[in-house]
Image 1 (cartoon, rainbow, N blue to C red):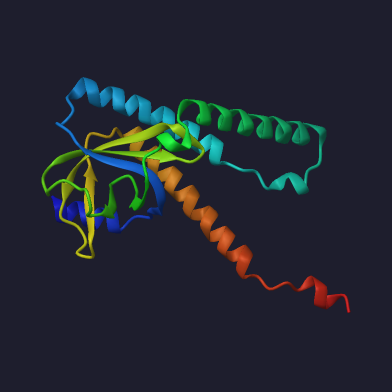
Image 2 (image 1 turned 180 degrees about the horizontal axis):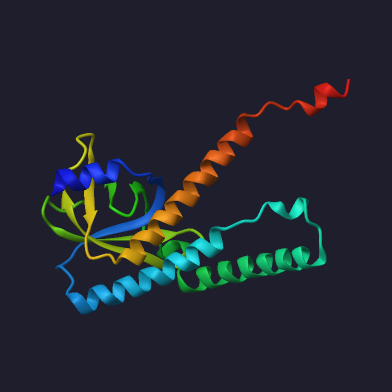
Length: 193
């Protein structure tokens, strides 16, 4: 299973960044606990996706409705930051870990990971919604041999897996768009002369 899990993980797009995250050794959750975890994860994924979506088409459409939506978006961002600071101040967050994850599993540093075969719970806090962590139950399995460990997620519903896939894909698309925008040469200033 671990080889299949690693292959499935490696074949998919993954989000690679430094997240506030923890990995805890836990007993395997029963069905009722898994249902609660999956319900919370579905809500977290909806909130994180909504808060991360930024519309860049405001320059093309300056209608009053678009301007009002932009003002509401800015107000919501301020409100979310206030709530984040009240519920979970920066000092209360776990330290950042470099990790790469998708709907199949996560790769993270060996330091502090339980032994292979141990059930774990990975909690990822996103910067846009720090107070609501994504809770991912899984098992520590053999993975890469470069000083990193691999966790295969277990018990996630198809809806949660799909939500993670969409979130990871959107982030990947944003990173590609930003890289393209930074690599374009500035041509407009030389054409005017």
